Image 1 (cartoon, rainbow, N blue to C red):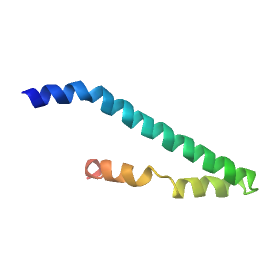
Image 2 (spheres, rainbow, N blue to C red; image 1 turned 135 degrees about the horizontal axis):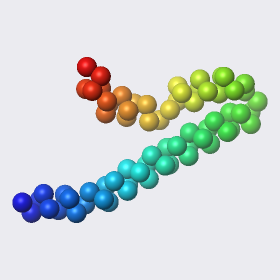
Image 3 (tube, rainbow, N blue to C red; image 1 turned 45 degrees about the vertical axis):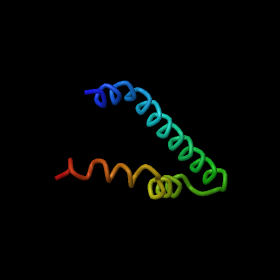
Image 4 (cartoon, rainbow, N blue to C red; image 1 turned 180 degrees about the vertical axis):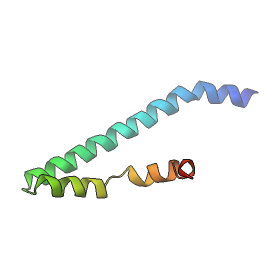
Length: 69
């Protein structure tokens, strides 16, 4: 019982840390895209590269692998 209470008290901290990781990942993705555009690459090539090098893609595949079956 005490462990369950401790978990629910820690749940907001865990949620805020996950939101922070998502914010950092999105900021990095926008910076990568901006750097490619500033480098002179066409927009369609930049969109493809940003999609291929998305750091959240492996995590998303792992989390939602079982829901697709």
